[in-house]
Image (cartoon, rainbow, N blue to C red):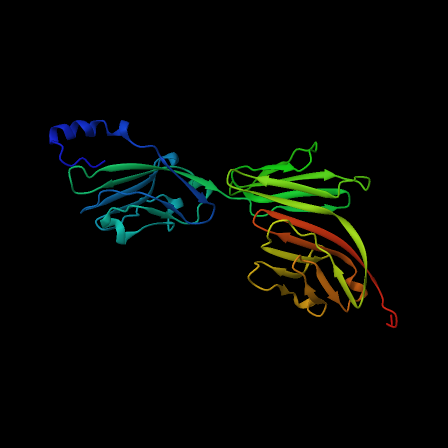
Length: 318
């Protein structure tokens, strides 16, 4: 608080009550393993001293600066080579800290202490750092009569829900990096009339949904065959075609770049429609199997499995 023009005797009294007048902590959300900015400003001046301290980790020294240079001899081991100040802006009152490779252990309350060579130059401000590892991908697959939905590397602990109520409790595991893996499985049978299984994994930061359509079977010609793909109602950002669940036929990671066909399938892939359906040509018997189309956007993945049986064209030798 700048108090220009107030007499010294009154100013000393105000200083005594500064802790009770301090503003609330500034909350900063940081993404796991990315860089994060912790803001801190002061009046600016000469002989600047800056101390960043993580209070929730036993007052661990995060970064110090004085005598016009970094002073890192007593810096906490976890923060070594991960912190920096904007040195060209310190003289203008900017003590903001940049923290790289954010970890879950970095979560907590930080104090930014600044001091300059003036009577009212000492200041403390506080940052509450929150770490998030958002839901990046949700996988859903069916093996025999079991449908499994899963997602990995999330923080804080996520929730998993199915589109239709099922009597199942998700399994949650914690990794060595304090992230969470979550999964849930359903037992299904051929008598089930539902053709779609959909699950959502969510945290306080975001959510993603995966939808699996019940497998279908088609017969196709060895000359040319089109395999359909169920498209989403929202704009797509990418898609992948796989053969027998593991072998990638082609993929497109963004709509502004063309799709890429793997070397093993360049002779067979003729075209791909806007909806994602694929047209194949010159198919041999070893191309019979399961074709998986995986369409995605920022929040949803839609998976369609098709079992292809190849019928030889008349006049073609075996």
